Image (tube, rainbow, N blue to C red; front, side, top):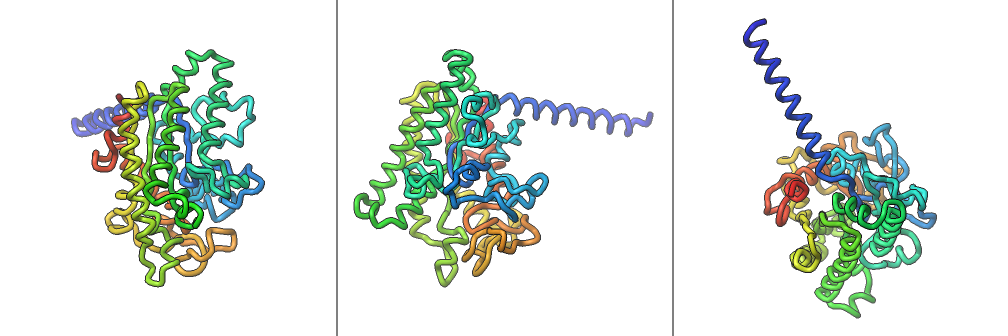
Length: 362
């Protein structure tokens, strides 16, 4: 055998072994993943809410999902929850409402409680049963935990939960709600409202922590004023800077609250992902990341394809990888993959105090 051929086979084998070992290592980082939040990570819970208008279980949603299936994800393909699971070597966590209530605890690799339209507070659409507010999501999680306790005992249940990752993606709908509601503006100043959001979230994190959860991923709110659905309201198609300012202010309050957690909640560790800066990078420097369109949605109708959302009557772009936004408010799979790659392995300026890989390896 020629020396060069031998070396190619040898080093090719080493690469294969290293890659396989890395995949196994990542798969061992956590045993399961539980998702809480809104439409950015909903994988189909709203499909099971009879009154919900926040649904995506129809084409062209899912045009790039396996088998071109519209599952209820607000995306052309996979969303952030799917991509995080993929990088961890876990299957995507199923939507809670798709599982038999008494057997939900048997979903050993995790459950997704996220719901399109949901927020930290019980907004009007949530009171009407159109989505699952975060309080209700945590309540469902606690019921799953109690079922685990009945089956394997509290000590073993908490031990199992301690090896899980808790993902919390929320806040955008609360900011939209404040912006649109005269009632909230009359009863709370913006800062009071943002502080109340963080305080309420802290109480819900405490409930999750009491079940044995120790590792958390929190994402900040992105530049929601730059979504096509907000740009289209402005004749100049510029970002809604009032909304962006609120998002930045909330993220600051959230980070401050999170820094209190490790001293108040025993054993808790977390990573905070700066969604705002990372999403703004895609919008302000699209060509750097392989995008051509950052203002308009891929799927929709009207100006910026944002006057009418991504319904079956809508048109959609032929190359979704060109677009930052899939519909008036949600990123494409391509954009979500870049964000997840950064939260997983990015520098401390984007993931505080550590990135997700470092959090899970600790």
